[in-house]
Length: 237
Image 1 (cartoon, helix red, strand yellow):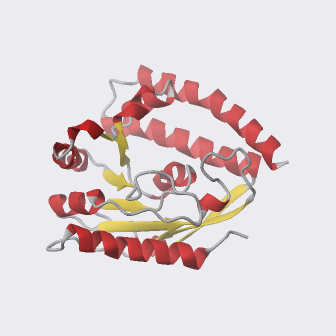
Image 2 (cartoon, helix red, strand yellow):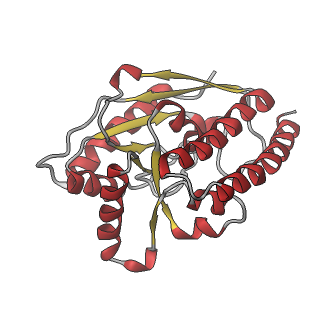
């Protein structure tokens, strides 16, 4: 039954994504934040589609920790779910992503107009300078910045070395980090068709100051909190 629901959900995604991509392209002339709201609505539509079709529900802890000033958001990355739902609770978000995503038909075209921060992996040492420059611009435009410190989706039960890019960005921009943990990977795993019904828990932690800290030490502090919360949450009911 889970596999059948997942197939129906993929059909739902295939139906709505070209519509939103066309709408993004048709409104390219809008300012960045109003244009981003169209992309955010697509995220909500897909997330609630998973809720209705696949039975993937969620609850949130730590809403009292959400700040009112721009932050760098560092989140656990074990699923596609968190990418879709972070924007439901946070201001307009600029995701740090590889440039290759912009070439994906429909999704990539719309994503390019949603004001991401894109990385050219061949840039080497200058990549961080590119990210910081784009980050300052996005903050000025009204966005917060999302970084997945693991770099890619990591299956449940596995650990990946946290990269220091998010910490370096927060230090360069002199803003705190908002850590986010969740257990979505159990219900919506990477590379698996069969999504499972259940209740995901997402936790917003207290902001972590970046000023005066070493990037490695700051990354370790964020990793300790995120992985500790992921362990506490365990498998969803």
